[in-house]
Length: 349
Ligand code: SF4
Image 1 (cartoon, rainbow, N blue to C red):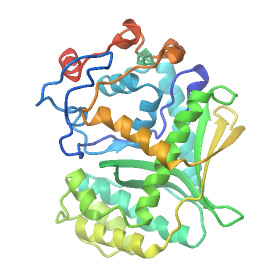
Image 2 (image 1 turned 180 degrees about the horizontal axis):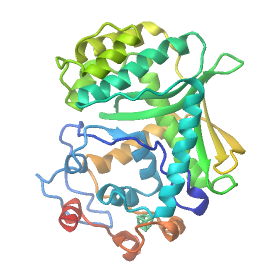
Image 3 (image 1 turned 120 degrees about the vertical axis):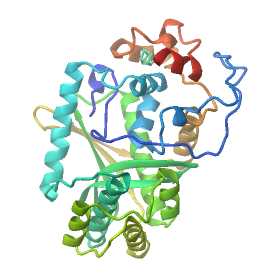
């Protein structure tokens, strides 16, 4: 949710479970000796993706990283650290998202006990929503996933619909505690988020995302039989599938035959959490080169090419409302150094 009215970052994509992993081969090397944090990494030191046992990255993590990379790292290392007040704001934001989703369809609780089942639920959501979009309808909470720049990315698009001009438009809802539009830095973070959604969605409809890539990155077993509740849910949806592999095949076939268009327009809607009043909307110009350059820079941290960084001096105002200000070594050193991955790992154990 968007908490940035108080100059601290939002926590979008509430409820996402993060489970990721490495996929850029082995690009590890010494950190840039010209950088302010001249620390050599051990050649066999785990990358952050390995250290956090991640098979993919959530778009929400990447957008938080664009606010302050060091803060995102602290959040990974110390989950549950945000104050009770912020947690309450997050809960309220989650409720608003849920209410919007319920406007379009009912929610069904499905018990999953394996990662294949958890992914099967995502795939069933894709399978059920693709025909709605094909017939010109509106869908909400659409799962997107795919390998972009060598790393498997996962996210959930708030809403997709067609405009009066027939363009496919993505709408991202951001709820705000304060009844005012966000600062430029927050808007920039949100623009990056929706641009990443477009990169992934477009790759999906272009057939660039393959079932083999999903299986490889998420270490899934296609031969695994679906759990009873997932199987029953699939059957109710009219899908005759027994194994996870059956569902994979069906989903990717459906995507490739769907002939869905790429996303034409990106819109971010900011609304006041308490009253539901729309505070304003932003139309985002998709600049692919800038988005991919920024993504590659962010991935450099995850794949061990460089150490994490805090905010630049000109953005030091972000530190004032940061949960981790009291322990942040980047801040304490005036933004001139940070801990190496190994030191971080040691400190956290
Ligand atoms: Fe980032 Fe500042 Fe927070 Fe450190 S104190 S994590 S530099 S926002």
